[in-house]
Structures are given as C-alpha cells and as structure tokens.
Length: 248
Image (cartoon, rainbow, N blue to C red):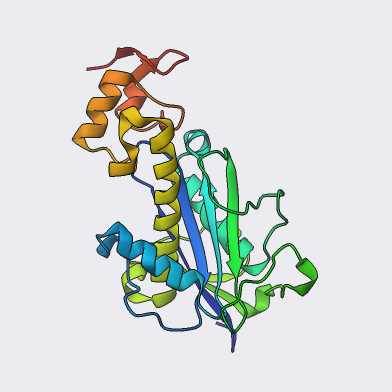
C-alpha cells in the first residue's frame, strides 16, 4: 500500500435476487460515522437510509455506485456483472465520468443498461459539482488502494487492491460502501415496484421469497427478471413474459 494512499472500500448488493440490478459501490469516507457496519446487519430500511445520508453528506467523502441491470447479468452471468460493477465504481471514485457518458445524476428504474452515480464533498460537507471537471481532483493510480469485499478481485482494477473476506464486517470503508450499494439498489427496486406492482418488489427487493415465486408462477416474468436464474431458466416465456412451459 502506497504511503498516504487514498483507501477506498468496495462492496455489492443484489447478487442473489431473481429480479433487478446488481449494484456495486466504492467509498472513501474520511470521518467515523457511528452505526456504520455491514448493511446486512442493519435490518431496518429506515436505519440504512439514515446512514446512507450521513455517509454521502459527510465532509470529504468520495463515493460511487455502479448499476448493472438484469439484461447485462443474463448476458455475462452474475459473477462477471458484479466484478464489472466493482471495477466501474472504483474507476468512478478515482475519476468520475462525464454526465451522460456513463454517469447519471441519480439511480433510477427508468435507466437501462450499466451506469454509475457519484458524489464528492469538500472538507465542510458541501457537495462538489462533478460537471465542473476542472475543479475535481483526479486520484492517481499510484496513490489509491482498494479494499474489496469477498475472496476475489475484478480483473484490470484501476489501482492496487486487496480482497478481504467478510470485509464488510471488518473494514469501515467497505461497510460504508455496502450501505451505499444496498440503499441505491433498494431505491431502484421501489421504483420497479410501482412499475410492476403484481410482484411486490418493494417488499422483497427481488429476492426469491415464497410470495415472489408465487407471483412469477401466476404472472410470468417482468422485463427486469433474470432469465438465467433458477427457476426462471427452466421456464419458457412469450414476448409478454407469460409462462409458456416449465420443466418440473
């Protein structure tokens, strides 16, 4: 690790669901925030939302969240989609893309494909305008170090990195990234819930609960369902998502 390196944590949310995107986040958080821990241990959604606001509004924070949609997941598989998201988030912490060129102002259910949302604050907690690139410091590869949750690293990371098993419980910056990823994804899923109310996505966020599986059997699959995930991969759908046949 380079002396004086910018250390950022990287984590993901949404590898297991049958519907919706996987979201990866990276974060440099310069001040301790009580309560920040692995997002899976924070059971109340309102508590995760509160911590998200504290993290993203903290002085000197630099963060990015990468959204990789269900179509892309089905194209390259969930592992590769997760790795892609982690790399995108890491790159965007170091150098945020221009708006409309891979970056959006906010995560939304209306945006398809893969993209990032980013944020930076000055030392007083005031948000910096990422559209004024000349005023944004680019973090050099040689001065960055990524701590990535899990047991593997994305290929071609933009800086030196280390995989850390259970890192979201061991490293503050990874825990902060886990909260950003989780809250970003949950907000997107609430948007999808309004678009596809039959599936009650706001309740289970796309995870394969009994209620979700019953809804799939009754209504078929929505455009945001991952067709390569069991049991959907054993079903044939028409162009409207209705089940034509299914293997028993």
